[in-house]
Length: 152
Image 1 (cartoon, rainbow, N blue to C red):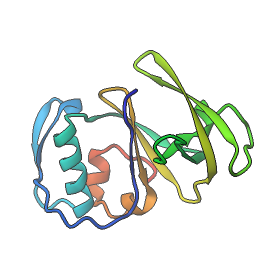
Image 2 (cartoon, rainbow, N blue to C red; image 1 turned 60 degrees about the horizontal axis):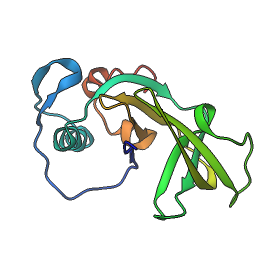
Image 3 (cartoon, rainbow, N blue to C red; image 1 turned 45 degrees about the horizontal axis):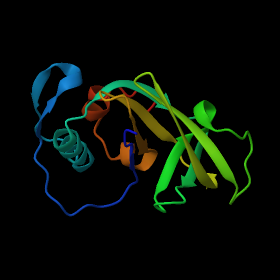
């Protein structure tokens, strides 16, 4: 299954390069004076060679779940792929995820609902990039325009 990136507003100490090939936009972008948050995104896009294709908008209901095997936290857009309409904390839910025409199911433990807006992008490889509003708030207007954020 393709991995998904979930980003919280967490400070990273690593200095990032602000030059990256952004395949979804078909050219090399030389960005100067970008925000620290955008530098983090450039680093991620460049290191994974996976770039945003399309801004999906803000998720209406985002479930925070935990993978019982790896104990890793997963963010799941509930309107698209949860098996239970109103799960209770600690219950098992089945997420059905479509990536590039393939359907995957995964059993997860429901922890709760996100209390902050989460922005989503479909990535080149078919997975989804999710960023918290706090992270988006750290982007400049030019960075938001570049990422095609309409409500941020």
